[in-house]
Image (cartoon, rainbow, N blue to C red; front, side):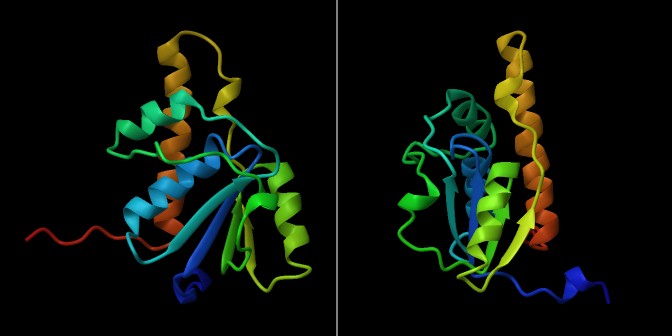
Length: 152
């Protein structure tokens, strides 16, 4: 049996990226949608960021709303007791590895493109954000062994 199949579903996940404005809030919202009331999910950044309207736009396309989200830093987290920390950017991964010195948790690094670097038309920029959203969705489904509820 593959090692991934033996993993238990984490009860608390923290997603960390550079500024908690794009990748980590996307991943958090997607995880909450796929696993409602099954996994505690938080997100943070290594630096303070600002809300990104492109994130709101591409999440709204799939029925998600993160209007209540305000970017926060890892220092602002009320709790660092997570089963799993998933870092989405190099600087976030460094922080996550440092956390393992004082906390017993699993850390995974999911290198994820930064769509804020995209240029071009509004639609081309949105496509970059959609690509990140869709890649995160697939990675989350795979890692957490998500399956759609049977229709009925």
